[in-house]
Image 1 (tube, rainbow, N blue to C red):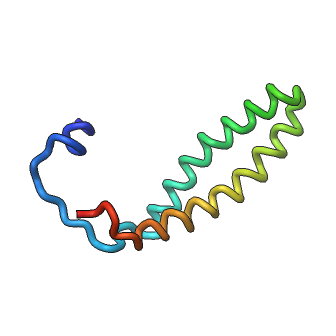
Image 2 (image 1 turned 135 degrees about the vertical axis):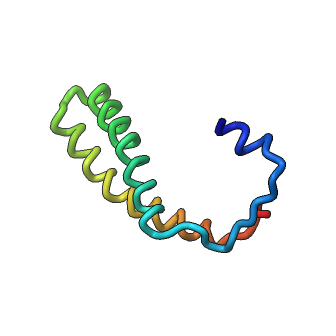
Amino acid sequence: MLVEQLFISGKKRTVSKSNERWSRSFLKSVSWRIIGTLDTIIISYVITGEINFALSIGGIELVTKMMLYVVHERLWNKVNWGKK
C-alpha cells in the first residue's frame, strides 16, 4: 500500500512550501528519537557494561538530537529542491 502510494500512483500531488505543522515535525522527532535513543543506550551498554552510564548517554542524546531534528526538518521544508 505504501509502495503503491509512493511509486505507482499516477496522481499528481501538489506540495506547498511548508505543508507540515510544527506539531507534526515535533511528534515525528519524538518517535524517531525513542528508537534512536534505545539504540544508543544498547550500544553504550554493550561497550561500557554499565547501565547507568549508558542511560546517561542516552538521556543527553535524546534531548539534543530531538532539538536538532526539528530544526533540520523545518529547514528542509523551506527547500523546494525535489518537490513537484
